[in-house]
Every structure is written in structure tokens, then in C-alpha cells.
Image (cartoon, rainbow over all chains, first blue to last red):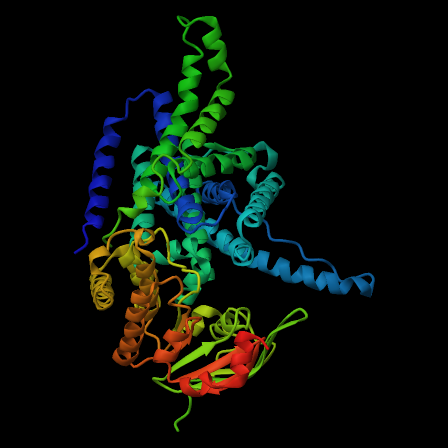
Length: 362
Length: 254
């Protein structure tokens, strides 16, 4: 029997018991702690795409936004309006573009109907159940978005894929900024604070378990094969497109879960919170941790969440000389400097590919 | 004679103005060891890429076991039973020796992604089976001692052999070897010849061999096709090829 499942179970029990004990924690530290958990989910998910499968996605925050907004929509019972169809009066010339528009609107109509039906059902299950359904709904929504973006764009490689995914991130942001039911530019608030230590780290553990058990199976070794040599992978009977899309969809799913957790912790989400910089943050965690090393990526996620906060604290210690405080005050510059130094001294990341080679057993 | 395993019929491929392969026809019967030789740039590797679906022929037909393979992606061609090695070694460099072979078993998996996630008994059984067959294959080729090391750390000759093992793990009916003896010394070449003949007999394979080393080709091939500038200039047994004036001219110039 495989023992990884029991390790996962052990962690879940551990997090459950620790969670009660953390009740009276300093809210500032608690905030950082949850932030670490959410970033671990994001980075471990993206590691599947950028690290193990070797595709460069730069739109992870977009999937997080989909998860955050759809999850919030579910827990706040936000129903969406049905699209209005064009009228067929007027010049015949416009009928062809109108017909094309109708096809798109019909698809939107189906999606909205589905969404409203889910909301309608979820209304009957308030409380924790609704929270979990909200997370799942956000995750699945993000996965569907990942599928829609992935199928056409994963034909591209390297920089081109990065640009397309970056564009997707901006499009999602743009849609939300103009979506009145989601609060548009005002942001969306009022979610109940369901996210706690247990749920965040339970999902982090599940994400890590899923990623690791995939890449340590014959099935999942296809991801690594695609990264190492796409042509050879094809010649060995591996459907490279399928694997790339699969990695993308799974990464998006976990990003959606992370978004849902984030929304139900901060109790307020804003489109600017899911901008390009957030995507870059996650990519930096993956690169710094060492592409394709889950342990390294988790450490990097924790480190990069704590680091800006440490610098913030240093800048406020009065006992320090003024010049040192001044240096620490420019913490974002210092943060970038640290990243540059780390990349120069350890280009393979904190844990590098070395962690990958040691893994033998399924 | 029974129907051929692989049949190329008037295959032509153009890259812009260049005819890389023109009106090429040849057949390989089941279990036959056929050589494909020609001077540099004659189009031998292009022929491989055509058979495995990396390139699509501009015209002509390629049939494998009675069915056309034209228009299929390489992984589907491999699933039909054509495996290949590469002229410049293309192993999965971050994987161990064993994992390289296991990865090639991927397409024979009966379980899906959900099984890999939940790790049920069916998954464990199949993983154990794959590990066993992979280790057996490695043992045949004498690579067992290095199972768990990175494939990059293998000596050059072993990397070439590992490529053959990996190709065999896909359980092919036809094996395409692209210059397997390149960069080997005479002793290694002699061993390789033995190995190719051994695998062909043991697994009942048909083999198409591209090779520059005449000693290797003449030594093991039952039939040889000679390409020059994308055209077939000769076909026959090693003895016939050796005395064919056109072949001599292509190789030595007039």
C-alpha cells in the first residue's frame, strides 16, 4: 500500500489540532501565516506548469481572480444577469456579425444559467458547506478558464506563451473591472471569514500531495518528459499537448482554490489585487525555489511572504541608526536587490534540480 | 510474400524549393533488418521523420501494417508500433536511467490520472509491473547497475544503448535506429552489431537502420537501400550494394 496518503492524513490532523491552538494569535502574524499558506498553494500549482512541465505561464493571478470572484459570488449569492440579445431590425448587412455575436451570447447564456442554478442550490446550504462548495466552484471555474486559455495558447512556446498568459491575466482583470455585479472598480467585500489556518494549510497539503503524487507516477512522468525533450516525448508515445493542457488546468484549479481562500480571509477583493505583479510574485517564488522542486518552491513561497514584512519591521525599529532605517524603508528596492543577489549566486534556485534527481520511488 | 509491415510508396517531401526526399519507395517485411545508407545530406533522417510523423509528406503514401500513418501526430504513430532513436541523443536528461525507460511505458498505462492521484491498489500493481519490465529490459542491455543515476552521467555508448531500451519499452513492431554507432569505437561497434541482431531476434522486430559505418551496415543488414540527394539509387543485398557502380560514384564522386 502506498504510504503517501497516510502522510497527507497525518498533516491534516496536525493542522486541525494546531488550528484551535492558534486562536489567540497576534492577528498580524496570523495574517502572514495565512498568506504563506495561500502562496504555497499558488506556487506549488504554478510549479507544475512552469517547473515540471517547462511551460512559462505568467497569468497565474488571473486564475486566482477567477477563483476568488466565483467563490465570492457563491458565498454572497450573486446571481448574474442574462445577456441581452441583439434585435434583428435594421440593415441586412449587420446580420452576419450579429449572428456571430448571438453564438457567443448563447454560450454566455448557458454559463450564466449554470452559475445562477449553482447559486440557487448553494443558498440552501449556508455555513461551512457553502464555503467548501465556494472554494470548489472557484477552483473548477478557474480550471475551465485554464482549459479555454490552454488549448489554443499551449501551441506557443517560451516567451510567446508568457505573453499570451499575461494577456489573459489582463483580460480577466479588465472583465472584472467592468462587471457591475462583481462590484467593478469598487471591489467586492462582505464575504464571511471562513478561511482559517486549518483550511489554508489543509489545501496547501492537498496541493503538494497532488503535485508530488503526479510527478512520481508513470503517468505524471510525462510532464517531466515534455519539459526535458518535447520531440523525444512525442516519439515515446506521449501526447505532449494533452500533458501541457493538463498541467495548465491543474495549476489553474489550485490557483482558483487559493483565490477562494484569499477572498474568504481578507473579506474584500479588488481587481488590482490580481494584477500582473501578483503573477510575477508567484513566478518568482517558483524560480527562486528551483523549478521543479516542490520543497524548494514551498520554502521560497514562505520566504518571499515573510521577507517584505521583516523589512517593514526593521524600518520601524527606533533603536537603529537613521541611515539603516532609511535603507530598510525602501524595502521594495531591498527586496528586489535580494532577489537579484539570490539569482546571481544560485541560478538553479534554492533547492535546484538536485531535489528532483533523488526521487526514485513511485 | 506476405504483406509488408512498412511500405513507402512514391513519397516526396519539399521544404520550400528543396526536394529533401523525392519519389522514394521501399518496403520492410516483418522481422526484417533493413539498412538505409547514403552520403551526408541524402535525406536519411528526413525519411525517419516522415515515417514517425514529425514531417508530413508532400505527396505519396506511407502505410504501416496495412494502415496509413500519414497525417498522424508522432505519439499516435508510436502507439501503432513504430519506435525510434535519435541521431543526436535525446534522453530525458533530468530523469534517472530507470525513469527514462518507465516514461516510455506511459502509453500502455491502463489507469488514468485519477488513479495516479488516489494511488489505489490498481495503480500500485501497474507501477510495480512497469518497474519490473523496465528493469528486465535494462538487464538485457546490461544497464542494471546504473538504474538510479541520472542518465546524463552515463558514458556515451551506454546513453546510445539506453535510447534503444527506451524505444523498446514502447513495445514496437518496427524499430528505427538513427546512426546508433555514431561516435563509438570499433569494439563498441562490434558489440552494438551483436546487440541489434539480438534484439531483432528476441523481440521479433523489424529494424530500419540508418548508419554511416559501412562495416556495421554491411555486417548485419539483410537488405540495403541507398539514398542520394533524396532519391533511391540502389537496393539490394550487401554484396550487390558493394559492387553497384552508382553507389560507388555517389560515395566517392566521379
